Image (cartoon, rainbow, N blue to C red; front, side, top):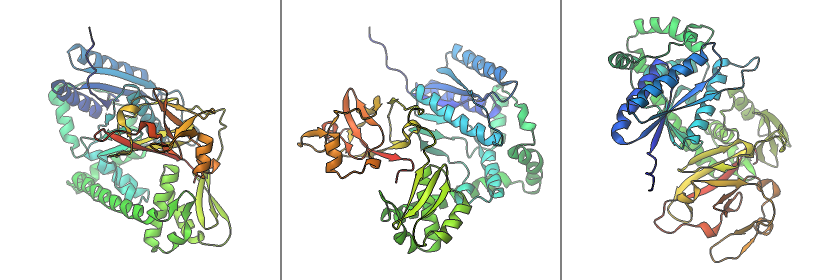
Length: 437
């Protein structure tokens, strides 16, 4: 007797609070009619004395809904580390929460994670970013959807007013957790909610939709700036780094925009505004120069700007990812290998996506053979690297195998033996080491 295939699934980030409880319930109601399984992802930060009780509440609630026949399972991640002295607890909790949600979603084979942020959250985010002197990207607030690490993160209620969610919870009689830390005014968002927002809404009743709409306009402006930066960088950013001669001829506004985008590509983080200002003043001098950035060093050398991460962790101490499931286009960050794998859809010349559902990540061990083109002989990696005139520092990164067959080599590309046939869903792969320019 053959078993039926698993249902397609969607994950919901479920803290147990009002908003995530409403989203989980609404998702379940819809999923039960569509034949879609739902996974509730709970992160126990361990910051509150009530964290254990909150986890039990979420587990019990999911068990009750599952017992009613709803297609629901529960998964939890308990954080073992803690904020360090001087850390922002808000920033630490947000960073660790998203990392834990990503691990849970990948473990359960779902590529879509729903988040319960709503219109009031978006309006608050814009205000907080403005108070931090954020640029256009910061004022964009939270995106409705974004692909990161091979997952799609979606906020389906970003245009939904908070009052509508409160009404849904009352109408459905949903029980939820009231986090006592929400009244702690040490946190900036709480101060905004408790002190500022009531007065703002009283003076400007349309503040919530107006600020959320402003964030949408900022998102469109950010997308436009990203497109301009991509055009400007296309001819001046390459394996040798960022060509300063090409950067210098741009207008100041486009130069700053391109520089910010290039630095974000290198470090996966927005560069400080103070560094952008300093680089704009100092970058086009003579000789060599360097600037610290994001645990690494920016260097001006022979007309190019490069960034390389500091070797703070030895290879022996790193934990190298050994497997990866690629089911869609996107960017897959592999911290142990020190880089990211970009997966892009192509019509031809790529590897069939079905080959990548379960791949092995291996280091070079010697004896590997790579076929550089259809009809060409498979040769050793050493000879292929030499033929491609690829320097040693561009040969880092994992080799990808599927079913024992070599699929991809950083710097060389896809092995010709796995090139797909016309009509097959195909992707191309690109390895980008962090800080290796």
